[in-house]
Length: 341
Length: 235
Image (cartoon, rainbow over all chains, first blue to last red):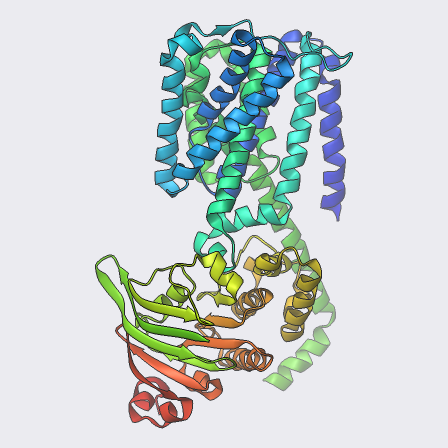
């Protein structure tokens, strides 16, 4: 019971904090970093749904992120399309591509799936990098517009963009929450548990895996499209494998297969790496060992481990309560022991 | 109801099951006897579609199952309760049961009724419905596995070694419940090493050795057979 109250309490506090954050800091740079963190979180949530809940580690997500970003960029810059129309189209393009790739990729499992998607991600990156006439190659796309006005609300200032991204992130979290706590979510967990077992209770694993793969790429695409409209310049590097591993790092540190993991991991890693900016690439000397130790000792990440401790504590409490009960009934149990003996 | 004609199953170049013929009629309890590795589980996996028969024909209610996918086979009424009490350990007892009713997921009322029925058969599961499946004892896990299979309302239930690793008293209870389930209208195909307990409730049995049927007959015939007595009953 205490845990439920705690949860009910902590979520509004976090949301409130996110809402007042810009007023507290008043620092444009911090707002910028936070907005960027929110954008990454959306991508991490997509990856979490697939890798965390369904057990299929996709390494193509930077590719899908870049497809979302470039779709938006090309449609607005080169096709001069209305921003929100381009935004919706970018999401559709990413999802359709996800569907087609999923059809083939999901014929493989485990390591083979990871390796296959790693290749897919790299091919997507190469296409963007080399297809000069379409994507401008290494020069990148410049002048992507900020999100268009919705009625009287404009998104030209960093502050308004911060709130737009925050609002979208909250909707994403709500959707993920609903999925995870529904039969659909349990179906994904069942597939992670054992595909054979899932099949023997009548789950069509291919259909469900394809569904979650498309959902996952949708969120990667959403994250990418938001990134493009926020940074307003994109280069092929956003499709690089390095980005996939960044997303994966956030997820592993926060807690794979948990709801709060993507938030915890992303905020933590993004802020720590901002703070350690002065160390340049030597930062990785710190991150590498920390990540390795974490995976060895806390494979469920920060959020997963805390949840694990809570469960253990609750169990101990129950066990203790039972022990007390037994103690108070000891004359009876002693009698029983005599009888049974 | 279920008919296997000359079914062989291969794992790569290794033939795990040779030309098995087997028939189950509606309302029966049929038992497959045999030691570990005799091919019982392979037969089960083949019936439920996880393995494909390399030759032969599997028929259920007059229709071929050979090319049907596992989920479609569950929909047609064959549900396997896998060996080793395979549950979803991180889900609660109630969630596990609900997963069992996956093919009936649109029928909320039906699920509630099935769950009530399972709780009548296994009252302990009702008591523990909010506990994690992984925290249950061995016997309770087996009950949950059977309960989950029942949630799919099978016409034919495949039970793979329900007595494995359980205390004798629990084994007896388990077989009582299996008899009850059968009496309520579910046909049962049972794989067992515990020939004594299994033949007591079964109508008919097949003895497997090295992936082939070496003996078949009614349970009385098998009980009376000296070879069986020596090999499986130990009398």
